Image (tube, rainbow, N blue to C red):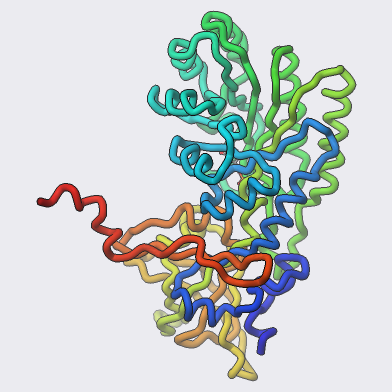
Amino acid sequence: MDNLNTGRAGNDVGGGTDFFGTGNPSDLAKTYGTPLYVYSEVILRQRCRELTRLVTYGKFKVNYSAKANTNLSLLRIIREEGLLVDAMSPGEIFIELKAGFRPEEILFISNNVSAEEMRYAVKTGVTVSVDSVSQLEQFGKMFRGSKVAIRINPGVGAGHHEKVITGGKNTKFGVDPVYLDEVQRTLSQYNLHLAGINQHIGSLFMTPETYLEAAGLLLDIADHFPDLDFVDFGGGFGIPYHKQDGEVRLDLKDLGNRLQRLIDERIVASGKHLTVKVEPGRYTVAECGILLGRVHSVKMNGGKKYIGTDIGFNVLARPVLYDAYHEIEVYGVENRIDSKREPVTVVGNICETGDVLAKDRILPEVMEGDVLGILDAGAYGMVMSSNYNCRLRPAEVLINREGKPVLIRRHDTLEDLVRHFDDLES
Ligand SMILES: *Cc1c(COP(=O)(O)O)cnc(C)c1O
């Protein structure tokens, strides 16, 4: 019974980790309510260590891209593991400081930000990376003589969906290298020190070729700026969302070896002292998270079987946003010995036709009251949740290293829904 209760989450995801520790999904769902994000501290630390050991180069740093998951407790663990951090907004800077990161450990990768947002970062002591010559100019006017980083668009992209490819001709991101002369001119006009150049070509690559190609291109650009402190090759490291179909993992060892070779040839051999950074978000946190939800209704409609759950797209937006695939486990099948497998469509409780979590998915027979586990939900899950339909955002629980569940964020209350109106009514 324990076996059934922990399902695959109990082994493959964490490489032998008992995901739910001393508890089981049904008990967690009962204790904390559903929907509920559950994280494994053991798996999170494991992923952090894989990343910090990616290469042997002494001046190598992993910047966790915090937009994937900004839970304070997870940020603290990631910091303990020696990662630095990226921020996409003043809000992320704020929460990262709360988690204990020092300003110099934070890189603000800005995109179309206001003067106030730049000022907040600079005042805090955080390095800003600008995303256009236009913003470089604004930065220079405000902070003449200071340091800045620039996001480059290397002209190649990668990713699992058009919406997440962030390098190449068809995206809003980065400075096109054809404008490097303008960059140079603007830097000297405002006496700015270019501390680093960074890029991020897209999200979720499973083979390293494009990433390495782009890294080489960034190093070509680095050659134009002899006083750089760092180059940052970006994130996008993929995780296998189709484990049940035997999807193979990104070969991190191969990526690391080839990256190390590139560093040796292009940085060490030329006597440079550049810090090399990478910015993985998803790889750090995706697999340490499972989203639990409860089945409230099972029905036939137009010849299709619908499994109605409390996991609306306000809780997990990825399927609706990107047609993303998440494997699903059914907890509660222990009394159904001969449970048959059948295609079902798993939906949420939001009043929108598009509120579909999984279409025509083959699952063991599901019944009202069962708990479902949505796997690999640690990245871009909770952070994208909303109060749409005035639904309450879920709680988050960490299974700590002792295997014990700890509440690391409470769920919303009904009062939270009116909090922002409080001061307006008298
Ligand atoms: C989102 C983002 C990342 C992280 O992407 P992942 O696919 O989660 O690794 C890294 N860098 C930048 C600039 C980003 O916007």
